Every structure is written in structure tokens, then in C-alpha cells.
Image (cartoon, rainbow, N blue to C red; front, side, top):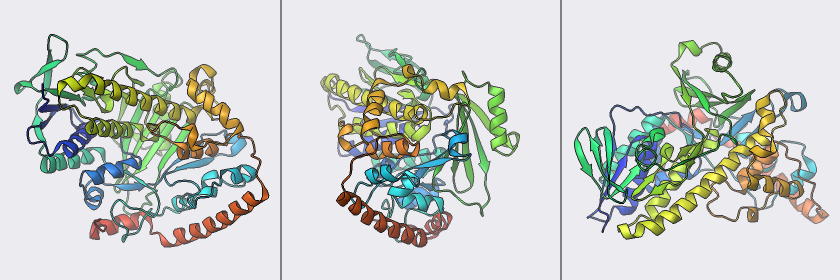
Length: 507
């Protein structure tokens, strides 16, 4: 039976990303329709304000102008995550930090990691990339003359999640003819073989051939109706609660071109600067900190102004579904699962999964079984690798000031593959062959920045004089490039204001 009618249940970032990915790939099939059903009664959670560089590829493929995106979604550029106080203050100083940059290390082609392991006189990121200095100088990653979606340095975005969903919706409806229905799904009817037959909504019964569950934490199709089990990861990742608040800013305030992630005794605080406000969140383990203490610490971070701004508490169930595709239903976004927001994993996994689904979407129901297996295997592997990368940030820390940090180093809380890799990396620095799967959503470069930002003790390599001499030449050239970039790139806010007035060059 041919699949002709697709329903996406839920809007927000995940629903509208799915609509655009599917619309882009399937737009030339005149017999196929895509309908997004969005409840007017359910607000967007709207805390996912950080992205990773892969989102640029998706937005460009949707035909969305980068200038329009920046103007309409309060966008700022994100070149890094700056991790503050993730190491012991007595050993590394109060305010110790490192950057997980978005530009590749050793961009001139010579691997500077062995040279840094012999030296360690400065931050790893500072040693191997000009972007460290650019971030610290609050400079932008490109010029006003740089074409859309191109950069002098690698970058992603900070954004207003609610406005981003509206832009994606506008694009999907206008460009890909996605139908948008505002109604609430009250119940789900199943077929004799437990596939989804139809939806009981406030607009009546609506029937489709294929269903995409983007209904958030509720997961009303995959979890509630199809009863797909949940794989809990709270024994590895302890963060399970967030306090979130939006703080107004002034026009004269500096806009850091990075996410600030400041560790505390039982978790960390994100701080994301948009053009007119900061999105902040205090994430913590409720097993290691009481809510009242969390509120008090968050208030202190905000300078005693927590009571003056709207804030809310969000409980988080950490883990993911045993399957993401069951019968004629695929879950995306929070309906798939949730991990704490470190490294912007939520939007990353949504974008990854939606692209994969669109590129291999079934034309007939007979295609579902083998495509579902492929999808489930691939996305499960992606989730596991993301769990490992998130855990890396905690288990490497030498903080001993609370049970939270000590518990994170307990052997039984560290995934087996991560333990194997860490054992290997005590003797050898990571190489690309350590990441054999193309479905590793975080790769060697990401691991290098975190490993050596947190001073992982890899054994000093044996290097010959010729290699060291060549590395020194590259290092000197990189230093000159750094000086030119810091001098030549515009201030972050300055570039954003120019884009607002003039726009970037269309490719």
C-alpha cells in the first residue's frame, strides 16, 4: 500500500524541522501530502536556544535566507562553548576555563596535538586554533561581505526557539506546501496489527498513512499508544532538573560569541546571549541538591534578580526510547528522548534524525520493516555516542568538592565504550580511526577540545626533531593568522547590527 498522507503531531522546533526535511525531499511527489497538527493548548518549551554547526547545512537546504533567519529569530553567532570551573579550583584556579571550539584544530593541516602534549604552556584550544582568541575578544566568525552560511571560522547559532519554530513553519507551509492544522489530539485509534489508524481530534477523526510523533515529553503516539519502553540513563547522567529564566539586556551590552557553561556543586549553568536578552538555566541533579538550594544559587548567579524575572522549573527524564520507529510511527525531538542540554544535543539529534528519515522515507508500507530497522539501529547508536560524549565532561573532572563530582567518576557510571577509549587515550591521543562510524555525531575534533581542555593526561608522544620543527613553523603561521583575525574581524554585536541593516550576500 502506497504511503500518500503523512501527519506530524506537534510543532515547535522538532515538528517544523521534520516538516522542512520531509518537504524538501518529497516536494516533487504530487500524490504525497504532509500535514502538521499542532495543539493551540500546548506551549513550546523553548529552552533549546543553542545549536551546532550542522544546522547551517539544514537551513541552507531548506532555502531559508541566513539574513532573514538572523533578523527574525534574535540570532547571535555561537563559535564555542566556554566551560568555566569544570576543574578543581584549588589546583587550576577559580574561574578556570576551556573552549570547545567549532573550528577544527590545527587548521593548516599539521596536527599540533603531539606538539602541545610536549609543551602544555597554554590552553589546548588557544594552541591549535585562532578561534580561541577570537572568542575571547568577542569577535564575530565572519565579515558582512562573507556570503550566507559561509564563515571565516566555524560557527553555529544561539536563537529564540519560539521565533525559530515560526520561521520554520512559514518556510514549510509556503515553500513545501505543508498543511498546518491547529487542533488537539485527544486519542489514537489502532489497526488490528497495532499500527496507528487514525487520530481523534477536536476537529474530528483524521486518518493518515504515516505518523511522526513530535509531541514532546508526552510522546502521545510512540510512548503512550504504542507503549515503546524507555531506556533510562540517569545512572550515567545525573542532571534531571532545570531552572530556566530569561534576563533582559541593554543595547550596549557585549554579546559573547559562545555559550557560557559554568559548573557548580551539583551541575552547571548555561548562559546564552541573544540580541535583547540572555537565556539562562541552572541544571542540577535533584539527588545531589535540594530545590531551595538550587534556587538560591541561581539567584546568586543572576545577581539577586531571580524574583524579578519569569522563571520556571522543568523536570527532565534522562534517556531515550528503545525504538524510535515502530509500525507506521516515528518519534523525533523530545518524543525520542532527552538528555541534559550540554552541547546542544536536543536540536542536534532532532536534525540528524529528521534528515535521516527524509532521505530514506518509505514509499510503500512494505518498505517499513527494513527501513525501520536501519533507522532504529542508526539513531540508537547516535544516542549512545551522545550519552558518552556528555558523560566525558563529568568523568574527566578532578573536582572533589561535592558528591556529585565524585559520583560522576565512579567506574560503574561510565559507559563501557567510553572507558575503553579513555584507556586508549592515556597512551595515544585520539585519531580519526578511533571513530569508525559515520554516525558519530561528535567526532575526533570535539573529543580533542574536551579531553585536553580538561587536561587529560595522555602520555607524551615520541616525536622526531623534524616533526617538531615542522610543527613550530605551523604554530608560528597560526599565530600570525590569529593576530590578523582578531584585528580584522568585527565585534560580534557590530556585525549583527550590520546584518540587520544590510543583510549578508546571498550565495
